[in-house]
Length: 190
Ligand SMILES: [Zn+2]
Ligand SMILES: [Zn+2]
Image 1 (tube, rainbow, N blue to C red):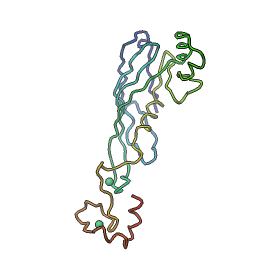
Image 2 (spheres, rainbow, N blue to C red; image 1 turned 90 degrees about the vertical axis):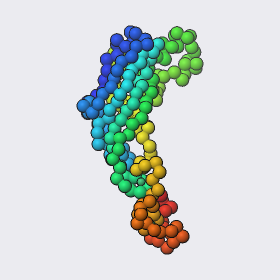
Image 3 (spheres, rainbow, N blue to C red; image 1 turned 90 degrees about the horizontal axis):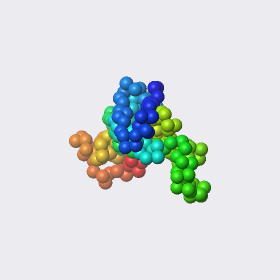
């Protein structure tokens, strides 16, 4: 896997400026399979880094990745693209001490400010020259993926009597016979 790194010095010298950091599959940001998801393309991202005051950068855009999975209701194979919007703050490593000096804050008052020693996983940081978004984008993907994949939002699931999809024209079962069926137990699981 290639790392997704960007030079950010020009951005930081000019608060308010934007940098396009879009990349596609050619960047080979491959993601390992996660839970029910098998990823069939590298991660792509379309978006910007925006430079704010105090060295903060804002990562904003849309990530996308192709995947295969099995619908948890009807077990049909799914081939789809997952997309979601992201917006994340990226702080300079010395943000906490900088703000503490600037606002004359006590240690207690500054307690919740992002600190790379205290919260390395809770916040994103940059070192003032380059930002590595490899792990950040992977984490954002995992965070935003639905826990269970569905073939469609209104998937009816399987008939507990005949085992076909409930909207299958060959399913003529009526729900009253459910308790006699070997599939009856499945109903509780779905
Ligand atoms: Zn389904
Ligand atoms: Zn049926």
